Amino acid sequence: MRLLFLVTLSLPLLLLSTFSAAQAPRTISCNKKLTQCTINAPELVFGDHIAIVDERSMWVATGSVDEIERGTSRKVIIIKSYAPVKKNFKFMLISAKEANNPPEVKITRPLTFKQMGGSLGILAIGVGENGAGFEVSGFYQDLRNNFPLLGRVNLISVAGDVKDKDEVYTFYVNGIGVLGGTSLYIWMTSKLALRTEIAAGFLYAQVKSTGGFTGNQSSSSHFTDGIGFQVRGSFGVFYDMDGWEIMFEAAPQVTHSASGFAVLLGMSNILN
Image 1 (cartoon, helix red, strand yellow):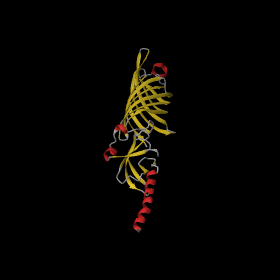
Image 2 (image 1 turned 30 degrees about the horizontal axis):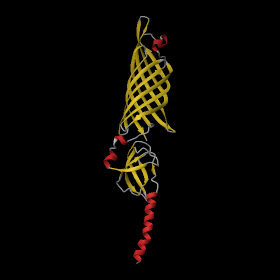
Image 3 (image 1 turned 30 degrees about the vertical axis):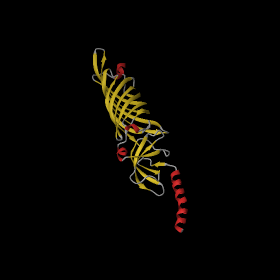
C-alpha cells in the first residue's frame, strides 16, 4: 500500500520534471573563438554529434558532446564552423562522418568576414610603352557593426620603354601603397566563393630611367617621384582548404596617372 502511494506521488513529479525539461528553451551560447558551445538539451548524451542550423535549416557548425554539465546543459566541442552561431539557432543529430566532413549543400556562410591574406602577381600598367612588372599585396579585414572595413598594402615594381625625341629609354617605377576600403562576398558555398573589393589611398613611387631621361619630362611615363593617388578594385575567386583559402584575383587600378591591371594568386585566412 505504501509502495503504491509513493509511486502515485512520484509519477506526477516525474511527469512535471520531464515536461519542464522538454519545455526549456533550447538556447545555444558559444565562446568568441567558436571552439566550444553550451546547449540546453537534456536529450543529448556524451559522444553525440550534432549540426547547428540557422533559420533556413542550413548548417553553420558541427560538433560533438564532450561533457554532461549540471542540469540540462551540455558542453559541445565545435569540430567545424562556417558562420557565427546565434542563441536561437537549433541543432540536429548527425553522424560522426557528417560532423567531420559536412555535406557541401547544407553549409552556409555569411557574406562578411574578419579576414587576412596576401598575393603575388603580374602587373601591366601605363609606364611608357608595354609597361609591365609585378605586384605584391596584403590585406587585413575587420567588421564594424557587421560592415567589412579593410586595409591594404601593395608593393609594385614595373618597367617600360619611353620614347623621347629619337631616343628610347627604359623607365623604372618602384612604389609602396597604403589603401583603405571595403569588400563583399557576392556568392559562397562551403568551398567556393566570389569576392569583390574597392579601396583607395596613396602610393609613394621612386622613378628611375636609363640615360638622362626623367619622368617629369614626358607625360607618357604617367609616374613622377613622390606620393600620388591610387584606386584599386578587385574581383576574386576563392577556394577553401579547411580554413585557408587559395585566391585568384583580377585587380584593375589607377595609380598616379597610370591605369593598370594585375592578375594575382595568393592565400587568405578567415578569422573567427
